[in-house]
Amino acid sequence: MIRRRPIALALLCSIAVATAGCATIISGTSQTITVHSNPPGAYVQIGHQTGTTPVTLHIPKGKDYPVEIAQGPDKRVVALNRNLDPMTLLNIIPPLWPGFIVDAVTGAITKYDPNVISVDFRTGQAVDYTHLTRFQE
Image: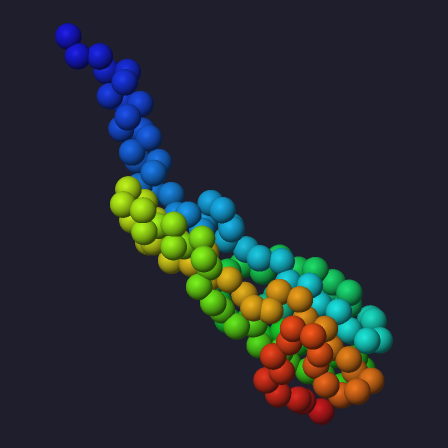
């Protein structure tokens, strides 16, 4: 007589491994982005989320979001670049190959750079870990 419990457990474990993406599990499907400004109190918008500096927002991965930072009439737009999340490379391990698909669908295959943005409105320049794309006046 075949024991069904160990077979069912093995099948369940196989399905769990096959449908799990490494970056989705380890890094998650969203990332925190922190925005600072000098002077503080600048209006920040990333996607549909807003706040005033200093602010930390949780942004879903997988889309291109411009970071708009405004201090009065002075407005800056900073690009969030997407890079490959190193945790995705764990999907190279043979039983985890389907994880590439899961990570791609959830957006966890990438991460944002920079994750800390600082803008100095007194000097007219973006500083620290920012990539300034354009000025708007």
